[in-house]
Length: 319
Ligand code: A2P
Image (cartoon, rainbow, N blue to C red; front, side, top):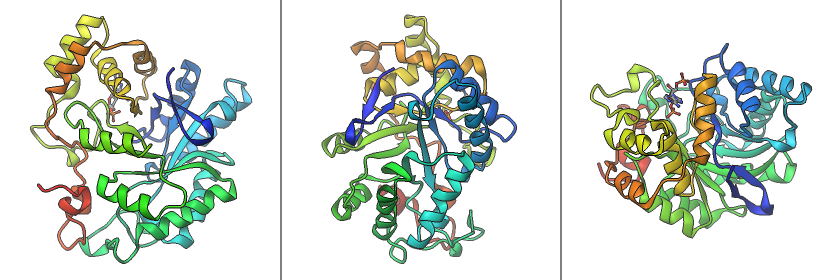
């Protein structure tokens, strides 16, 4: 498995297991099946509300000798209600307690969006706190202290625009090493990729398969189904691979990590085997034509009426 190299030569396996939308009651078995199949990178987050079950599964994997802690790369994320510096340490401590680990490999600010402490989601737009009131720079300083404390090895962000990344790089003592964003052939984000390459920031692709199991409330009626895209299925046939494998091989070919979610043992193995699919220049050129700047995760849930955030200020893009 290819890896992405971090500072101190730590290496993150380029494919990891996504755990967003993996239900309680399912996620533990999925983690165990994934580790047994050879996954060595897990992507978690406090807001997925399944870290305790993942922790139990990890404990069992360690006890059974399936894997050792040092062989795993574990990422988790600071939720929006814990941006105040005084809440950062307790947030990671809760995640570590749930995961039954004493350090994370990577800890990310989940969204450049802030909520009052203890409120996981906004009920109205007025609930959200503007970044001017609770600056990312202050949260980041508290994140940096986690490195010194030894509770995580690397820091990054998620859902950050190039503008927000650049602003963070200006003030950071420990620079962000990774941005986790939605990336797939319908949202290729070439400018972001160039920016991150120039600034030694890795990218991880979330929703690399098009996130078909999102709640219906977050889905557009006419949204494109990536796994059924004719160009993707044609390339899959050419390689005797599956559409999912082509999508993951595309992420790898661009030097980005990807964290496909599955709770199905066959699909877990299929996704991991994508690391062996090598796309040709022709394949890549065909996939390049599929870009349509389409977000499956639009972020509209932060841009409700009365919110200090709009889609334009969230993504720093004009509509
Ligand atoms: P399941 O968990 O039943 O395998 P994303 O990673 O983009 O969020 O996509 C996750 C969705 O894709 C889930 O519905 C997951 O279902 C499905 N999925 C995961 N792997 C594959 C695969 N190899 N082929 C088809 N669907 C897949």
